[in-house]
Length: 448
Image 1 (cartoon, rainbow, N blue to C red):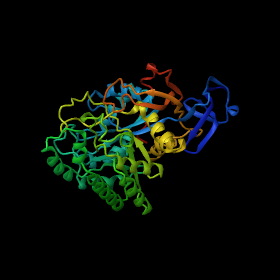
Image 2: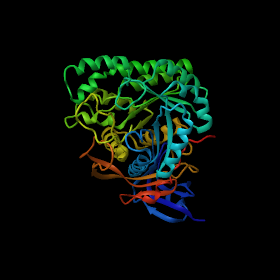
Image 3: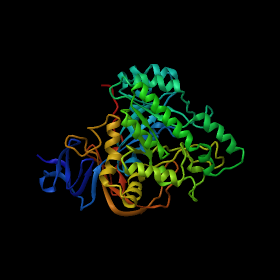
Image 4: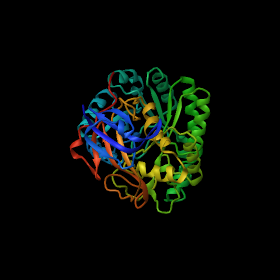
């Protein structure tokens, strides 16, 4: 019996290592993995010609439906994801309504009608009722991952309700009882940041560095320490998201040595950009902020040493930024289409990151953290046939067309996706996204 699709003559890499050969898929699942001669016949055979075959990227940190309608974002940004070799993304999503259960049903339906790759959901704690509802949310929706936000003052421009330590503690106590529960925290000390901001703001500065200096490293380090302490006391798994400071991975490593379940995510922008890059202005405002080269290199040391478990994009397609006032500008940039070339250029080529390490960071580890493995995150037989074929030698110039702010415009990067397959279906090939694939994406987070 023929497979649906075979990719052969590839440099095949996943978290286990690499080989020369390929993969076969049938009915959306990988059915064979090994040397090319061992693969079955197929209805379609693709000769990789030595290019690199990896598991599709799993990006567990993005925000959609914030500035544009949710259904529109799910269509446009899942296409951008397919271009970048992403086959799964997870949204940190929030509502101020009392219950998440009807919200889940509406967003799942809208997402599945529009997306061309699979997606999942984390819920933001935005009112006390959400904490009380956690057991029902897990039962009725399958969502077991919850986020709390520090660093935002009550009048912040994007309307996030900031957390308290009480909210975190109460959430952790409930999430610790869930079989796959994880609490994610945006770690910045709100009170310190608000105080320092007033001092910096009074100088009249509008440069990007002023925003960074208004939210100093101590804000993030202090809150990371505090959240680790609460995770230790409650026994709750903790994900420290979008870590911008080099000390963060070290603190988490020390905590894991004490038996605390804490993992660290950083983002592509913290590894490739600083607040003092001459070509950036207030439109590169991100929360937490871009740092300096010292923090960037410290983060890279954590990545190379295995102290960082995953890399998220924090992809958020806001409306075009105004560029008028640093302090009221919306924070956030987009990254889906450039995730692989950024890491291949800045990590693999420039710093010696191995391709195996890369697949752990961008596929395997995030899948394990949020309960998607073994379905996602590897090329093992029986897993979803989520694949990206990468030309490691191809060099292109970044040119952004679409929603949101790109901070890589004009950069020359190497290592671009040539083909993306989501659950056995080719969704990106020949530099084109298959428009007919929209509506084929599935919500992976479902009630048991």
